[in-house]
Length: 69
Image (cartoon, rainbow, N blue to C red; front, side, top):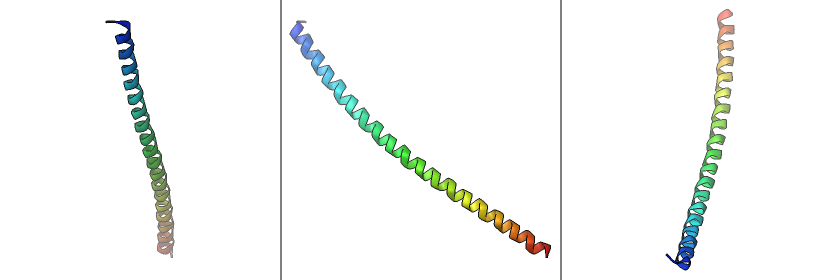
């Protein structure tokens, strides 16, 4: 193989690597955005669960107070 052919092959493979790297970066960016959205959803659900637990505790306290009367 001549050096010009080898150079052309290296250039073509470099372009392919650049394309794949760019595509991979796009995939990682999208995955990162999805993970951030999931994290926000989990935080919301956690806060909702805490609110529900507090409400259940208040209900339990109220029920005990009513039974004590």
